[in-house]
Image (cartoon, rainbow, N blue to C red):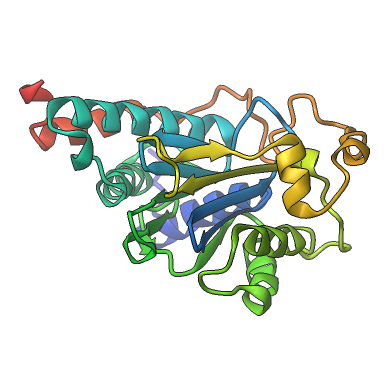
Length: 281
């Protein structure tokens, strides 16, 4: 009979954290920045179909870095959670803080108790308020830790380098054009040779509190994005086309079917059941 090999719990958690960080480090960065009229999301992502930034609910949006197929499941679970809560109670009862807490519980449980590998993702959930003082943003890491976003936050592998550049140019309550150009400049200096990112290499969206509609999320693309960046949109449309198809912005491969044993959709639904929300539907 062989003697089981003992590994301390501390070493197991350390190995799982290192594994997750390595996966996230392969993804290109996404920045979440507060500006005078809302919240800006910008990331390097030439794909027009595989988004790193998405709407979750009326005033809430989601950004992620890491493995695409995993954060896409989290996005879908978040939309289901928000829709159910808004249907059972009221649309005003759907908040970014509650959604961030739900993500944190699900990711924390999978990291510490899951039999499979940890999720290689890092998330940001943001909610725009009626005033700048009411804006909220939260960063959720692969192990379920939550921190609130003050001013701006960068996710992804080159986060430290991009954050360092952005810190020197960030202005509180600045205009959209100012923060967008600062973010794009920072994303182009992510520790590699400085690059000038063209509009068609970027994914940009905002939660705009000045919109008259209930839904505050809108994407900025094409000529509107080129105008904000002060470049010729037609000329830049031809730049950076190489490798666009199916590219998730440098993230880990999207089509790999491997998932942890515990489905994240089930984990979020379980949390929802514990809250008693489902039973009231």
